[in-house]
Length: 239
Image (cartoon, rainbow, N blue to C red; front, side):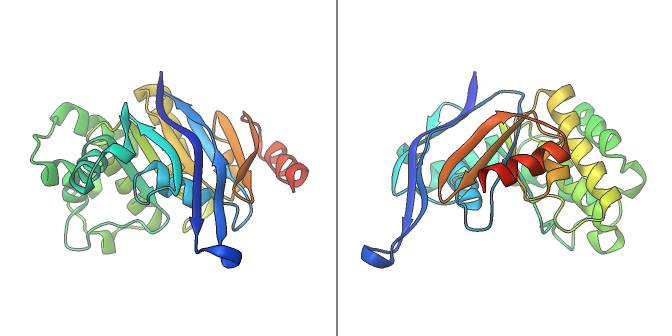
């Protein structure tokens, strides 16, 4: 079962001779419980693709289907509800609310949606991310790695159909990066979560089941995951 799919997805900025074709016809599908890394050089279209998949931007043409819903058929309120209820997000900048504790930040998607907290699931997540003794701390009292682990728990607390991770290790040291990537891997393996991650780091991509590489707005590689050295070789091969 595909959680996310696209058909001939195109995104053009500007018009005429100055038009930039950020995506030039991308057709992909993302099955449930799979970890996909999206890679490519700067300007390849990977961030544009992520924004279109998550309904944060609208395509010039083509379609995006998320959790059975064609995004083009949703108005602003429908898109907002979809993002709130069915999508999880982890960003390079942790995007935690400074005045809230770690516990309140994790529960924020449920608070905003007016939904009850599933305490057993919350406890499972807290123990998985290893933050039981940090729940009463605010973001300023946490390390970068701890903040990103809070962000991962927040992204999973409402059991989304898909978790989007945009350069989730970009602001972290190597040990914290490894911890966060292991969490995302665990979410796929133990919680059957679907994860789509944009990254430029070979070590991060090596954790994924599948690697998609974009260049100039088109897919130039779509295949099984490999180790970090293999990822670097792939990137060189596709230019």
